[in-house]
Image: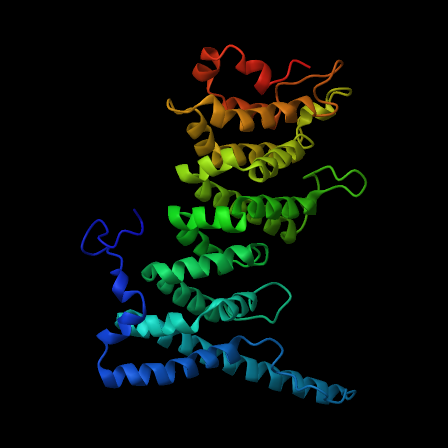
Length: 382
């Protein structure tokens, strides 16, 4: 397991439990231990100052109307900001080196990064806040990556903060690489699924991103106007979020959670129902529509999500699966198909629908064939 301190080779071992807690300080020389407890809070407070938003403009300063004064103040502010960010790069690199030197130093560093401070540090990079240099972002990301990789206790704490602020963090390139370090750990993923409704949050963020392409009148989705770099940014975010969904569902325990959670099932189904609006078949039910460029994005998105949900389908089709555990999920998909207005009724029907494909991907045919009465429960005749 990923949390097994033994690891799989001498060069890839997790820290022993006693060295990932307060006892780690006992491994330090008494003088160094005392110095660590004294100086570490000071260093972390310096990080607070570097990442503090709006610290460059004093409160209550009179409005300047002279153009030359404005120019000079802008140059002065930019110079101070540059120096502060250079100091931040050196600080975070020094903290990273300390974290690499000894278990006790790393524990002292982790203890200073509790929930509120971690939230403030991560939120400093959200859109709309002041601009940080790429070097500063990379140095902070490298520091957090080190702590996440080498301290299981810190990894869980960081994961909860990351999941809580996921929608803001997914908009920043410098920190999204950390998701693979937490969502691919079975114990962490299950903790976030059960304690913070992680899957519901991921799909809510995905739909929030899709809103960028929603029409003003009916809310239907359209990728017909991808004209700006911002549109490309949102498409990149869609791929990131889909990838994170895939990381989470790679764990059998996460798939088992989905089969037990009505809210997780609803979040998946509602997103796939929304994708019905993208496919050409809905538009072609009454009027023929030729293949157009926007539908390529629709098909890419549908295929991407189906790939990310493939582990869930594999879990449903495993030989030891029971009808009792699968029935709520399959019934949810069947009800979604029955209620797809304008797509499955007396006058219109199509098998080329995202939910159809998802249902086929999750269908355990051998199990249903053994249970003669299961079909009417999964897909109501009406």
